[in-house]
Length: 358
Image (cartoon, rainbow, N blue to C red; front, top):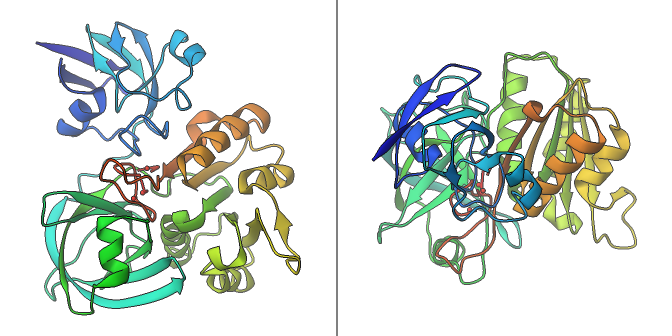
């Protein structure tokens, strides 16, 4: 049995089967709705049901509260239609010019950026390139049929190699291989690009970016893309970690800020040592101290689901950020269900939860 879903703002319509989620149906029919973890944890696919009945499925309570459900909100990665629907949601710009491919790639370099972070460079075949938007992710295809999603840390113009930032996950199948037995010149297969976490270039609004740990990867791609495009939109990046070692590319971020007057970088540590002279606390709360009014901004956030959920809630409710100007990817470090994370978007984990993680 199938139902019709109408998106109010765009007047787009699509059919959804009773056994598939709204997100699965929309993506299957070429509509690009925002999503992250696809597991009901990050809230990136949140929308509103204006009429009709749904089953909320496995949507987690921290991402979709009881009052939210009563008000008609739903997570489209979990929600299943029980009647025809009219919904309200964001749609990303068309991605039809960025075909999803399955390709081989050779491990070009393995660089230990921190004790638990490996930067992996993948070399594409000489005659191939992957077209993608800054902030998207790819799925690494494992031999047992499983996938591991990682955000692309390089900008689209710099596409001779694909760069991934991989955090080691205790007990993780793939990350254990990366940190233990992977060698240069090994061959991997991947599928992509995926995800709706990318820089919205049709806006002139100032940009606030908030990254946690390896959530820096897609943020890096966005900033390097903006620099390459000679964008002069003000960008302020807050990058948070527990200790200094977690900000494994701080020198690069500092270089952006010193070279480009419109870019500002603020490192934040939640558990610093005694010699740390920078900002302290939760990264999104530090950003809120500096930006009490975000009504004229766009915000891009990538990190663990809890951080993304808190940032969305607080920036919208306390800093006047329009909800449709919040873009996120999240990642989860749990691997008890076969998922691992470093910065994997959405599937395992963001926003497009990148190992969500993006």
